Image 1 (tube, each protein chain N blue to C red):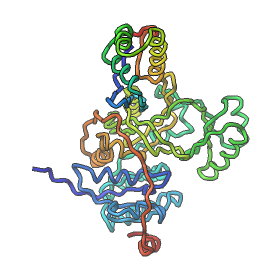
Image 2: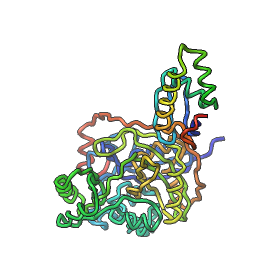
Image 3: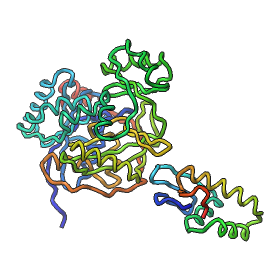
Image 4: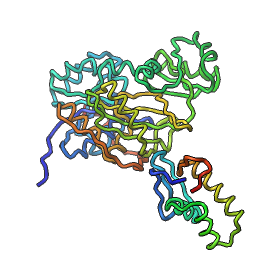
Amino acid sequence: MKITNEVRISDNGFVFNSKTGDSFNVNPTGLELTKLIAQGHDFDSIKNIFLEKYDLDDLTFEKDFYEFCALIKHHQITSQEDPLDFK
Amino acid sequence: MSKTKTKITIAVTGLNNTDNPGPGVPVIRSLKESTEFDVRIIGLVYETLEPGIYMEGLCDKIFQIPYPSAGSDELIDRIEQIHNQDKIDVLIPNFDSELFSFMKNEERLLRSGIHTFLPTMKQFQEREKDKLIEYGEKYGIKVPASINLGSLGQISEIKEKLKYPVMVKGQFYDAYVANNLEQVKQIFHKISDKWGLPVIIQEFVKGTEVNVIALGDGLGNTIAAVPMRKQYITDKGKAWGGITLSDEKMLEITRSLIRQTKWKGGMELELIKTVSGEYYLIEINPRIPAWVYLAVGAGQNIPEALVKLALGQEVAPMGEYKAGKMFVRYSYDILVDLEKFETIAMNGEI
């Protein structure tokens, strides 16, 4: 999974997809996740960062992470060659 | 040392900057930003209340001209009369409905010294809405299924060939969504009264409407092309806000079409992008669209390039533009003294 080339992410949480013309506001947690994905972190690495930083259990992280990934994929912010690939 | 700009007089139609805007005003704004031409603008208007007449600093001179429906000869005679009074170097017509008269008289205008850069009659006619299916087949581009209604008697064909909702379109302008037979009948009358027959019934393709403004040099080269998505659409289906896109597929479709047709002049491709990423061509407007100033802001001054082509100058293709550039329209009240309105109404010029 990777952020598509046409997507621009601002530090204030504004995400713009220049291929579709869509723009989104993500909250600070969403921004953190998006940036980690953009930096090339895989699922395990992001999970470790979040579990260390926040009061969070494995299961909740996984559920919220996959939900967030499905949402940004739907909006063509990320592309996945393999639908099960969250690396 | 700054380059000396060439002084030039350009006549422009389409100053009706209403909620269904003509491209005249943005074309003039674009020309005034030319780095190569020092332009003097002659505004050509059909109606005395076209807002461009009253916009300060827009036109140097305004002339009223007769509607093309009054006859091509009357229109061209009037243009020549204006030319004799106030020399026109280049004429940029901006309405679909007047293009036929200007294309037909292109040589006559040139003999008088008036340059244009218009599509050929073949290019103009083969992209007409009622021929879109043949056009799609010929040039390898997906188009929605459609039926041309020459009379209401054919209305039963809709049920056989299409599913509701459908788009009901006039041959020049106007497009409405109809959800059932009754609505088709109502819109049919509305459109045929205004724009004549046929009325086109088109399959409703679900997706996002996206557009490309482009300029072809008549030899198959794409001189300019900028894709855009409407962000805010009026009840007339016009863009009130839009944003430039970085979409290589849309550019490929445009280049392919211009290469195959050797399109000459400005154009607008109206496309629907489906959720699965397919593009359907729903219309080709054979002229510069009203959102041209967005393309200029994004880095491609299409009206300036069109003027150069009209004058026989070489223009290199413009590849770059800024994606994510937006435009937002607004309405604004201009206060007008009665004397100004009286002058244009009575003298046909100001």
